[in-house]
Image (cartoon, rainbow, N blue to C red):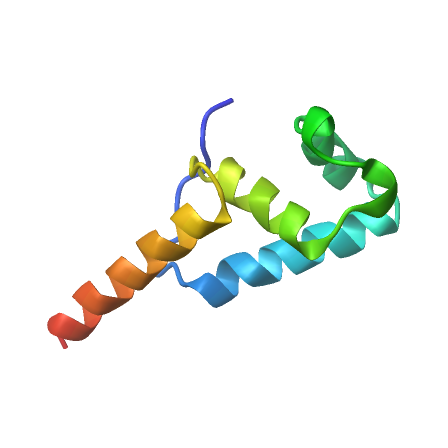
Length: 85
């Protein structure tokens, strides 16, 4: 699966909102969120998907090894942006 392209001005809040939306959609039975989650079936108990699980899925969608890697990258980008302001 090809990673998704980062948005123009990425930040952690954007990705966290995506994870919350994914979790909500999954719990409502949305077919797309169920399909995204199925890519990681071996990692999660689908009867009890948590926010941390949804964050992991979002991070993997963007090509990161996990949420902590995505967070580290967003923190580094934030520092770079502040340097140039």
